Length: 183
Image 1 (tube, rainbow, N blue to C red):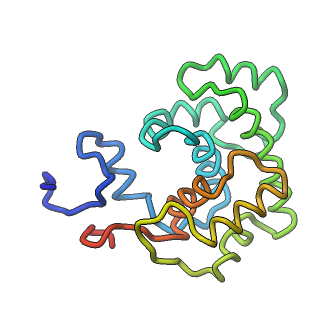
Image 2: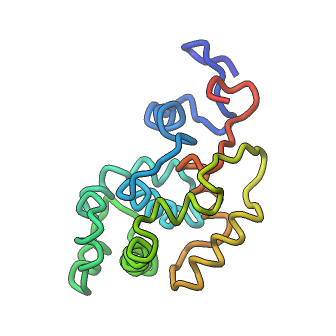
């Protein structure tokens, strides 16, 4: 594919969506170690289940508004009234089960922070702090184990494919295509 700026990118990057291109160029695969950002991406990836990442990304700003900019304390405190309001918010994906899972997962995220000192320590501990380079996959032994652990802790919408996409998004796994200017 010929890109306007002459840079080669991963095959999935949609050249017609500037938001998607910026995500590819500036965020995807960049190692993230800040818990607030790790939380945001985990919640967004859970909403992606059964949908495209582009769909979620296009609604990201609405999600940020709706979920109080992914303030963990606020999301953990959501009750039935707030969850009902989220189901009425046309700017986000209004799936009741995913909204409930987001609140549930926030509470478990907090438990993991308490246990490990930070979610980042927990997450990056699975790879001893190292980035794994692999391509052409949608799951791995790592995503299988991490998914199983998160499920055991009570998280929802954290199957191995979702967790693999999450690991790619937050840079634990670097999957940029060969030839991509970021590979």
